[in-house]
Image (cartoon, rainbow, N blue to C red; front, side, top):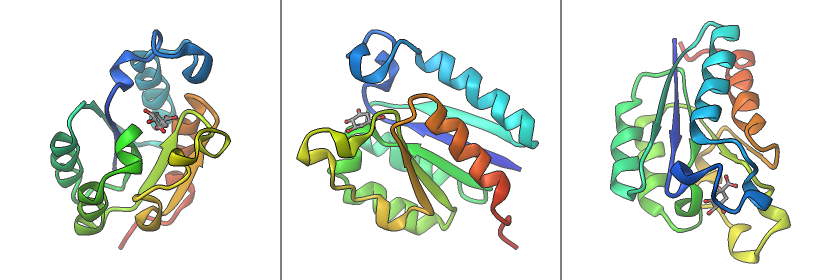
Length: 144
Ligand code: DQA
């Protein structure tokens, strides 16, 4: 089965973007980590990034029928009703991830429009947040 790992705005800049917060790993490094974790659990991984909100809606819709979605919607987490509605519409279990511990940061990062439609949330573990989310899908029963 397939797990879609979807990344939002500015995550293409990882490695150079605020390394004190987000670390030195690039998005390509995180993709490699996800592919390795997927192999460990027998999942095919679809790994995508877009800077646009509508692009993320399209990627969520394209994940219909998948085993799960790992979603780092970046700043759209804190702003987007459209992404929340897309997740609710496709009915694929979604795990919300963040590299940083958003609760240790500014107040505006403490609210997520996505958490209410997430199966769970993992934040603060850097790139390992993604690997933990993929491992979580392996431990959850697949939908009938
Ligand atoms: C982020 C946290 C968000 O608040 C921020 O806007 C990001 C990245 C994270 O992975 O830590 O762009 O989702």
